[in-house]
Image (tube, rainbow, N blue to C red; front, side, top):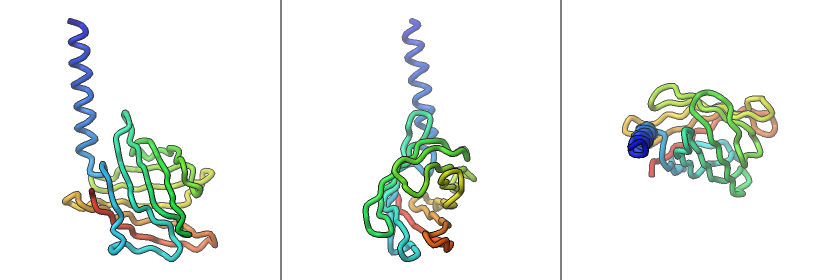
Length: 154
């Protein structure tokens, strides 16, 4: 009887956690809509971004191209709580933080050696079918550049 109760409790917990992630408008696969996006010359482009549950955290997997056209890939696992979590695979940043503003808006900061190198704002459309990421950071010469990437939900 104890094992049935334990299994029922675990199943209930798993379904509640699953519903919480499913209700998050960020979750899923997002593909870059290049024709609606605006990038400064030589800027990297994230062509696919995937938000997926990872235990009680979220895993963000990003694939794209660097400004020189070479492929890029990075991964981040953490929570949308404003705390810094490590990025694996990004030579320009070693941590990222996401802060949830509301159901359709988040901010992010990428840091390298504790210094903010990129700031961003993600806004998901009311219908949940697109998201716009506006980022600001300095290029290699120190010039501030701003990019706007529009993604379609897959």
